[in-house]
Image (cartoon, rainbow, N blue to C red; front, side):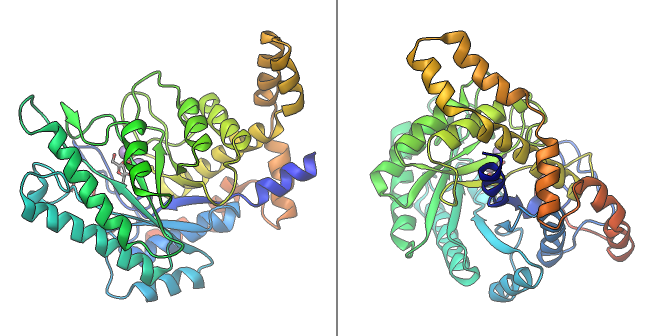
Length: 384
Ligand code: PSV
Ligand code: MN
Ligand code: MN
């Protein structure tokens, strides 16, 4: 049992986002931190540290245009030299004056063309970097009743998605992300998993839904969404983070580790534990140091995963079949209440890693080194 769990944990891959390493903030203030990367190459170097100390963060998501470079093959080569690879390509159709009234759903066909062309450019970047995943998040929506035709905007969305879908090559897919609200406050064009799922269904198997854990109304049962999408074969991955109020982008597992465990249990139970479901972090570290924040986050996902793998599924099924409500609940709670840190420490030692990644990173001197070397780090793009 423990051997199987360790093998599963060893095989886990948690993707970190390039934007987590750069300066970020709120709409009120971006606090600059020392030592942050000055370009995408340095972001990859920082991400490689997270992988070096955890052993389970082998890929890095890019965000275009924040990570725009002249030579993407060179960027991918640089990643490989550092022992990591390029993960999902995240598009950005939300930071241009032209997108004031929307991007692919904008009433103006010229703006729609520009937005769709950007998405197609992202597929070109996938080709150049060897990435298999495009992540689509649209800030599109309206602020006032009557501002635009809700249904026509769905038609425009479908048309753009079709064009991008048809451009995908073999081994490529896109993940459609939903978000309840913000920046639009009255209607959002992809507000929930149902809307994302319906569009994906219309398109075909290369279109899948990504669940950003911070993008739901308070109290939403996210593990239900996970179970449902897995059953339909349409769960493409996660953007993990924590929320207390809205899209807070705090460290995953910080606000509600029990929810993270419940989600991971549905992943494991539903056959979603494998490379076909991407475990990505979508976080910003506005106050805490960034590389250490990513290491902590990766460890939080690992801990929730270990607990989910520990669930005695036979005992659970037996209790469920017997209608033993308390017994079934106890099986889950037993796993959740297990301290898995010794197991993970043991696993890390077996992987040739320090059992305590946070302490090992702190001792490594990397942070002091980059603080001395790098002056004038870049902003991730938020609040720009
Ligand atoms: C905006 O809400 C957002 O956080 C989405 O979750 C995207 O995944 C991310 O930004 C990067 O574009
Ligand atoms: Mn996200
Ligand atoms: Mn978000």
